[in-house]
Amino acid sequence: MTMEKDRVLIFDTTLRDGEQAPGASMNKQEKLEIAFALERLGVDIIEAGFPVISKGDFDAVRAVAKHIKESTVCGLARCIKKDIDAANEALKGAKKKRIHVFLATSKIHMQYKLKKPPEEILRMAVDSVKYAKTKVSDIEFSPEDASRSERGFLFKILEEVIKAGAGTVNIPDTVGYSIPAEFGKLIADIKNNVPNINRAIISVHCHDDLGVGVANSLEAVRQGARQVECTVNGIGERAGNASMEEIVMAIKTRSDIYGCTTGIKTQEICRVSRLVSKYTGFVVSPNKAIVGGNAFRHEAGIHQDGILKERSTYEIMRPEDVGFVGTGLVLGKHSGRHAFKDRLKSLGIELKEDEVDRAFDRFKNVADKKKHVFDEDLIALVEDEVKVFQKTWHLVSMSAQSRTNVAPHVEVVLKSKGKEYRKASTGDGIVDACYKAIEGIAKIKGELLDYTIHSVTHGKDALGEVTVKVKMKDKSVIAHGASTDILEASAKAYINAINKVLSQQTGPKY
Ligand code: KIV
Ligand code: ZN
Image 1: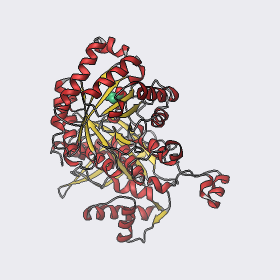
Image 2 (image 1 turned 90 degrees about the vertical axis):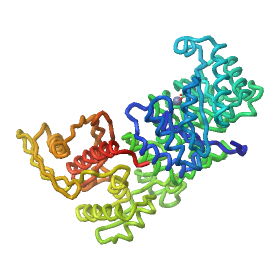
Image 3 (image 1 turned 180 degrees about the vertical axis):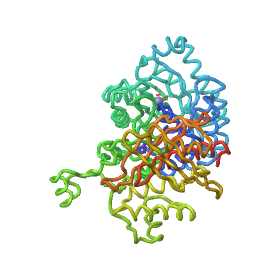
Image 4 (image 1 turned 60 degrees about the vertical axis):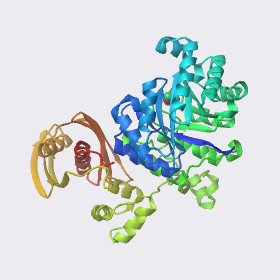
């Protein structure tokens, strides 16, 4: 890969390191949809998975490799032949591909984890890079735990893997131990002490255990790193990885300091952030930089006054530059289908005609009950219409009774293939009763691993969005449902989870 001097490559590892976050696993279709969104975002390299680790990972990397044309697709491998073979096999269909091999180089990892002396580590790294290079021309090497590695050994291994054919050397702060000045110095030292470093791109990969993953990455850019590995919303192992959106917007907003650009179409950032949040079930906290719900909201009177007089008084980035969706009043109950579709389009949501019909029906329904319909409401409403799974079951109606000291009672009517089914149930609580009735109809049992509800906008008439994580038939899935009635939102989320599991059984879409 050739690159201009001032361009920082964005290597996104949401689908690999991001997915290593406890509870973040995604299925193949979800990963593929995220990969498409990352490609549209302008990410240079998408690390799609670790193919040798499981059949699911292998298949996901293969699917991403087959469909993604603009970004380079990368597969991770240890310095083991079978790992490199698996990565190579999974990447076969890719237009642009990279194998990323890694091996730990810190004393603590070599001695206790790998139980191998440094000479053997050096030999394994060089042999693996050479072997991978016989398969794919674009090779990246990572000395895992680089920030805690003995400097002389680190410089030597980098020099040798570059000689062996690595075009990118990635410096991971695997355990998030480094602090910015120190990490920046490490990058400067690598530039000064690895004789052939000009033949490779220096990349960095920072974890956030001390909350400085982004700061470390940015300091590395200042010292000459020209690839940054990061994840959407900063998800990842333990405290996560450096957050893509924060790095990109810092480089853009403070180009006076960094003197670099990225290829990211920043207007797509919030859209990708929402997608990742939706499929991982990880809610983005309101105060999260760039993509948090409050990131562009000004509450204090003095700030609001300043903003009205001159935006730059309190605004260093424009919300529209990151595709931030505000709470502007958009549509009411008299709005037509055309205006509805146009509004969705401007929010970056494109649906097929039948999906628009269903979403429009739901919108009309909500507009009848709710005084103001905001952009955020629209997104929540249509998101479960954007099909990534077949809808076997639909909610037709439900009724519920709940009284103090009496077991709650819920009756649900579901539809499948044109036929309606009815079931009533009691339960420990109203949601439990509702889920028992749904399970009774769909003849499937699930374990509810997580249940969250949040109000999409403000006010008593706000839409409630329920997210459930459910284990069914040995699969764990995340699904959502939105409604002004929170029990209905709960039912929809559970039905969507069942539909998702059933559609995974009947075979993938891609
Ligand atoms: O954190 C780490 O060291 C990694 C490597 C595989 C690059 O994720
Ligand atoms: Zn990592």
